[in-house]
Amino acid sequence: MTDAPLTPSRSWREIFAVWGVALVGAILVAVFAPHDLRFTWLAIALAACTLLTFVLQLLTHQKVGFIDRLSISVVGVLGILTLAAAIIGFSTLFEG
Image (cartoon, rainbow, N blue to C red):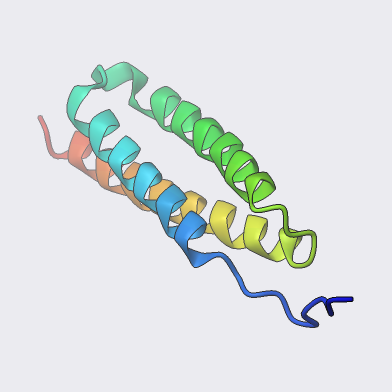
């Protein structure tokens, strides 16, 4: 009989992967999205990263710590996309 670990090891690889996808998505939105639809595309990127977070965390098959891993991933994505939205917002102020 095997003993289950008492403390879950967070799966940082999946968390960093989702954060990387969010960063790439923010860069793509800033470069390629039309000016009037940039914030719409950032919201779509947030939704896609949230779904990706659920998929990757469910694929780990670890029940213990699921909420913690999910929260860390989504809060990180939200922070990255919020920073991207602020940069895009300030850049539109100074475009002319």
